[in-house]
Amino acid sequence: MPTHYIYLTASVIAETIGYSALNASAQFTKFWPSLLVILGMGGSFYFLTLTLKYMPLGITYALASGLGIVAVALVGVVVFGQRLDLAAVIGLALIIAGMGIINVLSDFSVH
Image 1 (tube, rainbow, N blue to C red):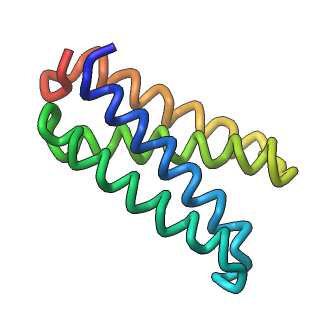
Image 2 (cartoon, one colour):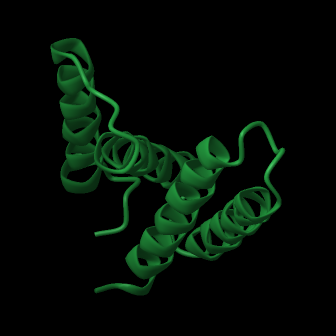
């Protein structure tokens, strides 16, 4: 796997941990989940900056945001028992399709 995708994946994982902990932090009233939010989001930004050595900002942010949205939605379903309606599933599928188009067809994405 190319280095930039490793950094991007690490960024998305850290972001997913941070946002998932945000839900568990109860509006920052619980210390450990709140600390995990700070560490997760900080790690996400760190790995995002490393990704920027290889990919343009707009593409990097689009991919990281899209993957993060899908990952956090899945954590919401699996961990927190949240439900997705048909519109949410279609929207997430469109995000995934958009990321695929960027990766395969865009001249700005690193191939």
